[in-house]
Length: 120
Image (tube, rainbow, N blue to C red):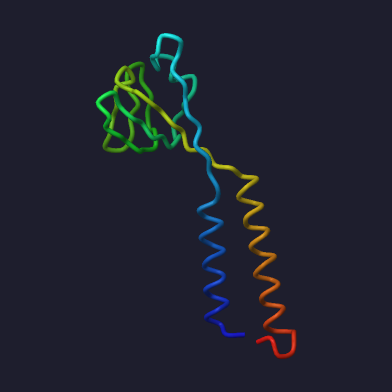
């Protein structure tokens, strides 16, 4: 089998494994419509997408949480000015399933190309 094909398939598998699967979890404001209790729902190192009341958007990984702000690299947002907040969460089970299925498919291709007469 051509080594460039194997390298390409390996690279695709690697990208799939590193990228993994993730879902987005929307954080709801409290009954008064504010995110004052936000520290209970987010944590340092969470990757968040924040839509502000002025409709600006920020995407960042939280480095610090204070009583009034979420702080990331080169960005800090006032909790009182948040309109919507979404947390990106990794889905380990989906990632493992994707990798397993991909390995299975790659294995079938390799077997078909290397061991089945006339296929490769």
